[in-house]
Image (cartoon, rainbow, N blue to C red; front, side, top):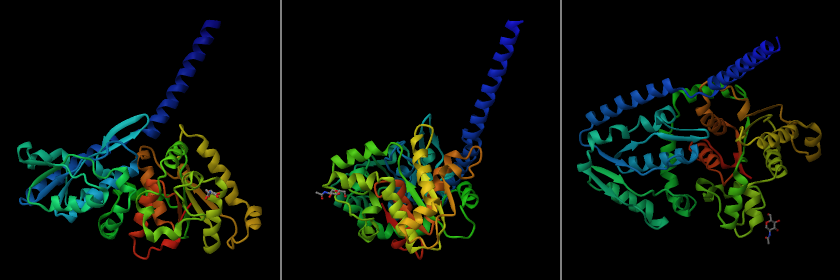
Length: 397
Ligand SMILES: *[C@@H]1O[C@H](CO)[C@@H](O)[C@H](O)[C@H]1NC(C)=O
């Protein structure tokens, strides 16, 4: 008798565990069938570009393989821009997804339709138009200031099939002043050619915190960032990419960044919750009509403490007493607060959730971000590329 009961308990438990695993699978499983369709379309579109443009010149760059989503996106957009500037077809590569526990090559068109539909082909068909015997290999590395002009010169040249062997858009270059001369044309490029895939755009439609009301977006960069920031403080590193633009200097929440001072770097790179609240208070006081806030964060099963910090902030945003105490929020406390984890992301859509977050922050009336984060700086670039954008609607903590 006893044995039979135990068996039943065992069978029942196993059933519950399987059910849970199935639920997780449904929730997290990437849309492989949809990706296969995107890949198929990429191949067909690429073949027709090759056929329609017999005299086209091509460039294939050495790209990041599996860094953060926004690091890859930023680099791909800059390379596509460089290819267009030098009248070459951009040979795009898959997005390398590397978020534990999965590493996978995903078709780029499932994310960036703008890149894959404008003067570009997939690397999968590159050797159809540029067999190894026709390829010219080049190295473009130079001092930061000379790099971009040199790359333009070489790519303006007559060789039909160019493969760039060295990785040129490295971290040091992206954080240097050499990026500034690229901004005017890159801004224009983003306005003309940046476009998410239709799947992502559908999610954006569905995911807006409010249908019509303006909202504020906050990027709470936590997770593994504290150690990273300590390293940046030791190496006296400043903001990254577009956060270094002189026109954004006024957006930095005081006291200003002093890279010689470790505490100053930590204050901007890994701001305390109270500093984040002060930045929100500042924007709320000059934008009293905004009573909705969306918080982008990197809370996940491997960074559970981020949720704790998020909930502390949320309580503060909702607190009438605190708002009265700090004064100045004419609109009162935030009435609606949403966050990355509360967005309506359906089964199989989790790969795209990060793009949804980016776009919600691009569309927000006000953005409070982190000048050390490439997610924040991608958002800033996309915001500034829009007509009617204003730097005063941005605060860098
Ligand atoms: C370094 O930065 C911290 C934080 O902003 C500030 O309190 C401190 O006074 C600064 N120290 C110096 C020597 O400037």
